[in-house]
Image (cartoon, rainbow over all chains, first blue to last red):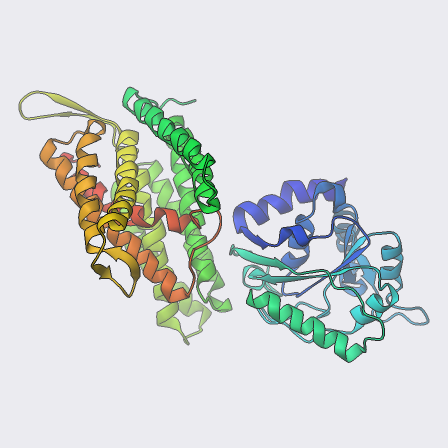
Length: 203
Length: 312
């Protein structure tokens, strides 16, 4: 409920009226869970923009993965992460358990999970090397589609370590579903993802 | 609500929408998607425009300020802006508020000098505070030039709304000057010029006028458009205080200004390497693809009528 109010009254007006979004291939968005969305990451706006693409009905199911030590650092941030965004905590330092455990649980719950394979917000308008967690997730759930989303302009509007939002039109390009092919090796899988993002960036 | 309506503007409103309905019926039998989108967007453009024109001057000024904002943002989004320039871009946006506020309170001299003098001096000052000297000239110039085009020049359209006066002529007659009728006149003649240049270019076009910037524009299109525009300027002169001679000049100014505005925006697009500024108005492109000629005709027409009738 709070999430719905937050998105409809604050996030969407800012993104659509103040910033302006240019969305390509919106019909390729998943219409039901479980699904995995992977995207390049330059700004906090990335998460908000992807989530705001979904209808109200689905919003509850759309959940971004975020680092536990950042998104649950204190009780105020935790409250926002939990109630307004629905962050799936990823504990990078966990011992004994699979760090991806929360993501698996979420996928079994038929959620639409947003993952930023770069791990962190990099320099504006730059794509860093992808981490391999996505390979392990896709391997475990080969029937769950992976949807790549390329974004541009967010890093200019709200870069890392800046609090001042300067409006720019942002671009979102949604790619085709990717399904895990049996016996594909990690290296090949990651190379393939890289190629897909390069393609999305150029079109 | 709708305190600005006048008989003349209602006539124009009626005619515009009859034309639009005819165009809509016409495209229903065509399969050209771009043409259909274009008409659909015209409904939205004209619907919003008339709504704000008829509402009151405060809302109208806010509306034009918002258009200025959208168009400046379109321009900035395509520029290769350095991250260190973010703060200057921010101040450029803020100056929109000042510019339109000065229009709202009708502080004429401030409206004229705020962007050419104060913003001009301030932006470079703010730039040196950040301290990045690489690309200093190029970036400061590109950002301020954007302000001049999409805020300063365009905002003349909004100032026209304040021109409401009864003007006494030398022979004892009086003329009723109405701001929103002047705006309608300017917009209709400017858009009419676009259309007529296009049509006469398609029909008679042979000699290219600016092959490097706009390969589709021809000398014949330009001349034919100019003749048609002068005709339209005379036909619609009941919206203005103009005599026949003055309307002919107005048509001439709008025709030449509209052409130049169009090709200047085209040159920007060619330089950046884009076809359209955006897709906010399906079938037209972005805001800047629609208001390109108005950016030039607004200040030219404004100072022409102000020179003749001393309105500001």
